[in-house]
Image: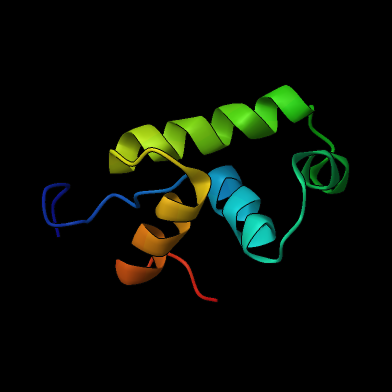
Length: 73
């Protein structure tokens, strides 16, 4: 199988971890503490995913990720 046939995952592992915690209704601060990263880094991950999906909010991003099968709720 060559590189073109392998689908590149949409989310990085860290972005996935952040969104899995967001779905559990965790705050930015709680996510930062749980993943041992800063709140700014959490916001950056969320912002990056929103850009990838061309959506304007966290909840829209979650809905889109679930629809695409990238995230389970």
